[in-house]
Each structure stands twice: as C-alpha cells, then as structure tokens.
Length: 478
Ligand code: BG6
Picture 1: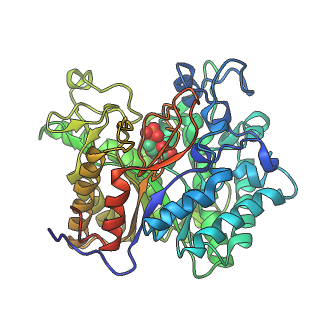
Picture 2 (picture 1 turned 60 degrees about the vertical axis):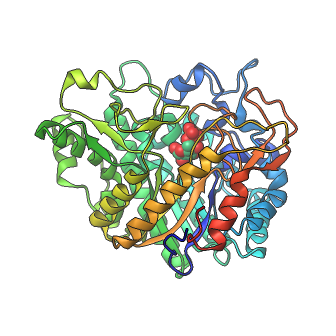
Picture 3 (picture 1 turned 45 degrees about the vertical axis):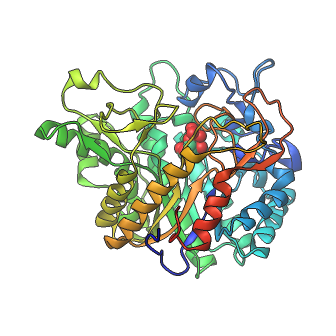
C-alpha cells in the first residue's frame, strides 16, 4: 500500500545522546558528569529528582553510562549501519564534559573536540546531516559541586563559552543545532534536566524556575552566537512533547489540561515567542516566586528566538480537575498522567497514542508557526533474539508505522515538518531507568541490565523495514 510521500529533503534518521551511548566515561580527558553518578536500581529515581548523597560513583553500584554501548570506540561501525538504512540525519549530543571537563576550564579539551570532528566527518562521508543537541542531560559534575549547577547564574557564562567553542569548531560541519534537550524535564527530573540538588527545607519551585530562567537566557545567547558564527545554520529548542487531554469534557478538566500543557509550553513560549507569558506571571505571583533577572535579559529573550521547534513524542497525557480522578495517576512515568482507558500501554506503562502525535504537532504549529522537527519517538520494549538468530520486533514496526502515518497526516494538515529522528536507532541505556533491556533500536546490542554481553550489533527486522521507509520517502510503510 502506498501512503503519503514526504516532502523532498525530509530528514529521516535517528536520535541518540552522548551519555546513553558513548561510554568511555573518563577517556580522552572527559570529566565526570551528572549522569555518571546515576546508578541503575532503586537509588536512581531519588538522584534523578535531586536527592544526591555522593558526588562520586559508589563502590558496588552499577553505572550504565560508564560503558554504555561503547559508541565512543564503535561509532564507525554504527554509522555504517545507519548509512545502510539510508539515514539522512543523525541526532547526537555533545558531552559538555568532553569539551570542558570541569565546565569552568580556561581552555577546551582538544581530544574531546577532535572526537566530535571525527564523528561528524564520518557522518558527512555518508551524506548524513548531524543534528546536534548542545546539552542532553549531562552537566559537568564539577559545576554541580562548585556552583550548584543551573541554580547559579554563572552557568549561563560557562554554557555560552561551551556553545561558542563548538559553533566555531564545527561551523562547516553542523547546520542543525538544539540548545537543551527536553528543557521542561527540569520540572520533573531536576537533577537530570539541570543538575539541581535539593536540601531539606529548600523552596524547590523557586529553585527550579530560577534555574529555568538561567537556561532560557543561556538558550538565547546560544541562538545569538549560532546565528553570528554559522549564518546558514538553524537552531531550535527541544520539548518533551505530548498533548494533555481532559479526562472528560467538564470545564474543570479542560482547564486543568490546558494548565498542564502550559507547564511545558512555558519554556517554548519564551524560547520561541521571546517573552514570559501572562499565565506564567500569574503562576509566579500566586506561588510567591520571584525570578531574579539581570538588566538586558528580557531584550535578549525577545531578540534571539529559536528557528524551529524540536520535540520528543512518546504518548499523550491525561488529567482531571477532580481530585478523586487524580488519584488514578499512573506511577513510574516521568510525566504523571491519569490513565486513558482508550489507549494501550507499553511494557513500561507508557501510553501508546499515534493520533496524539498528529494532535501535538498541530497544537505546536498552531501556537508557534515555526517549522517542527520530531527529534524523538519510539517504543521501548523487551526484545529477544530468537533461536534463528533474529529479532522479530514486529510490535516496534507497528508502533512506528502508526506514528509515521499520523506524521504524514499532520503534514497534510499544513504542519511544516523538517524531519523525523526516531529515538535510539541502536539499543542504548534508558534515561529514566538505566536499563538496557528497554530497547528502542533497529539494531540490537548484546548487553544486559547488569552490563554483561559482547556488545555485538545485530540488525532487527525493523532495520530492514525502516530502510524501506526511508528509501520510499515514507510512501512504503508495509
Ligand atoms: C527522552 C530523552 O526523555 O526520552 C531520552 O530525551 C530518553 O534521553 C527517551 O532516553 C526515552 O526515555 P527512556 O527513559 O525510555 O530512556
């Protein structure tokens, strides 16, 4: 069956992040990052939400980022596989601590800069566009210990230096950039999103929104620098997307759903429209929050807005104005949601809602009128290698097919879409749980949750399917 054909030049590909793939956590002069002290198991969630007892890896704990899937040493082999699938783009992130191991170093680390130079060369050799996230969840640990991370205005300066350094270095190689991965994550997993650590009695909300202001200013400064240094580049923001549905048509439910969406859109409203929205000012007032700004901040935010809206989409959310219904909030998800009875769930309890992608894309486009880029989407599932040596991941194909159809629908609705980089084209470490068995890839990696395995790569059935999707520019999804 022929489906919709995507626009010429549509960027099909995949998305990965440094801390979930590279490993080699202390090689090439890299410093420790926040993710390097996040173990698997029961302590991970507490740390992710800002309760950190030790700034050093603890003996006896297992830290999946230390080796991850060893992409640092195997990127050539992996990129060859992406090229075989016909990737037009690969979204990666640069590890800040490879470039500035402590975050506040005078000069950048040449070995780190060289690593990404080589990586970009390898991609460009195959005609694959690098799409680069400047900060994807890994803050140099020294910045957390010495400055309190994004609580501190000093981070803006360090980030600007880091961003400027990489723009200058890669200006001829990278034309698509993104500032902060899932910037709204700061409200849900503050240590993951912004390296925030809380102590007893802290006013968490005040700390979070002040840190958000710092990231927003840093994001504008990065947009400014990017446009000045690489005039033909595009730089976007990145939202953990997923529309919030009202549980019923009761006005209280509808209003609550709008409020929940605004909690996330707040960040993009500033990054894309250039100012704090009225509803945020009201929220700050009613919660006694004071955002400390410096002279010139507002002008900066207004002047240097993003070129496109990048977003991840795994599923929709639902909420209610009724406290009784709110008791049914599903646990284990980063974004708390009332269970939607119309949707199926993944093995990790994440709601599966392909049409929600069309809804989310339309909402974002209606709101911002800027090109969108779906930079993450996919199904985290348990895969097994069959006795025939293959991975029959038909459930993943099914998930992706349905989402790609809805993406085509959104384009026909008039949404301007630059590309689609599905999450984890090669199995990688899960950000929320640290597991390996939560797999998203078209390529299987032989490694388990405890770190055992040969790290050997194996093409899954979805590998051949995605290759055909790209080859036909989305027309053949069968
Ligand atoms: C997004 C992140 O939150 O979702 C990724 O940008 C992450 O880093 C992805 O891996 C999927 O989440 P998880 O927890 O299944 O890895």
